Image (tube, helix red, strand yellow):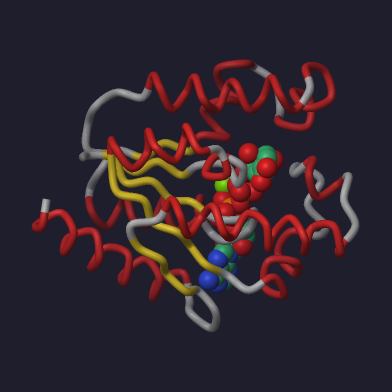
Length: 171
Ligand SMILES: Nc1ncnc2c1ncn2[C@@H]1O[C@H](COP(=O)(O)OP(=O)(O)OP(=O)(O)O)[C@@H](O)[C@H]1O
Ligand SMILES: O=C(O)C1=C[C@@H](O)[C@@H](O)[C@H](O)C1
Ligand SMILES: [Mg+2]
């Protein structure tokens, strides 16, 4: 039980909070999306287009399985915690923090982003349905759920750090 995984829908702040949390707790930081981009030399939209989504999902699985056993923060991609095998592995190897945001907040943050292929190919209603479907998995994955509505990045990071310290002392 060493890694601290950030999970949640696209735009929930996994990368933004994960990076801040790593500064606050003085732990190494890994952003799965960025690591996959670095390892493949391709952008995420390029991987989706050239190799397909299934290939990207396998890269995520491989990355999770290969992550070193060290204290660290791992920001996952939005789809990682919707796979039961990934959920099992994350819960076995670390603490899982779910950033629970409202769909309205998420939509404002993500709807114009060209770097998220799932957003590019979906209507607002389709994304809303995906959000509802995935939220069930995020809750199943989480040791701790953090509601983010009306909270600043700083407030969420401080609360996450407090919860991590509390859970760490219990394990
Ligand atoms: N609580 C918040 N208050 C203000 N801005 C926020 C908050 N949470 C996230 N943001 C902003 O929303 C944007 C998207 O956040 P971020 O990239 O961290 O999401 P993500 O969960 O990593 O998404 P993805 O799954 O696509 O990687 C960033 O610009 C981030 O700073
Ligand atoms: O929610 C998703 O399925 C995704 C989220 C991003 O973090 C990236 O991993 C990619 O754009 C897919
Ligand atoms: Mg991210």
